[in-house]
Length: 302
Image (tube, rainbow, N blue to C red; front, side):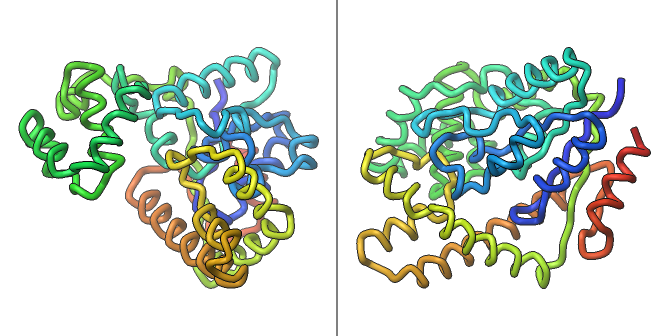
């Protein structure tokens, strides 16, 4: 079986564009691997492929979930496997593309069984956290002292997740990580391609893209979410907080844009740090090699 190329890198670097060119030359279809782009209603703010791009190349797992839905890494693995099955059955080439490192890593290293989300339990724990996070942390220390040393009390997401897993599986996070993980059935076929770019080039790209997002209706996206009172706290939607403040006349649009730029730069920095600490098969510096050269190189590999 041919390699399944998986294109990843920090936000704003040009992953979608490269994946589309690769798909054009390899009779391919693209599967999104992004924890934010999977949602409907925030296409602009999460930089989902444009209607024109989607018309050129079929995309999967983009804008399929409602904003109030949650998805775990384990569920994402299942969805990706299903889409790969579908694309291969049609005689085409699956290409993965996105910026959520955890999902890429989970494909080959796995995620323990039972890692699905129990929304009722999670919501209850989140409410408890807001009332008395110290009590929740003491609970974690009691039944999983090893994992508690890895979780800061102010890290709401990880603390709640650890308690949720214990309630749903009857096992601690430490015990679950010792179990045989659930990986993608295509784990041996993935070929990870990491895209790099120095900050002197990446940051102006990010700033320019934010301006385009504003022009394309990002403010209206946020207004609709606020008007419909949708809770999107589970989505890392950079810009929601800033544009909400703008819409409530607390800051100017220029201040909102600047804050979004700062947060996006910080997010890209965290992504790069995460990617650099994990393994990949091939990397390209986009300030040194062209998109066409990368595509040609990958076509030759397969």
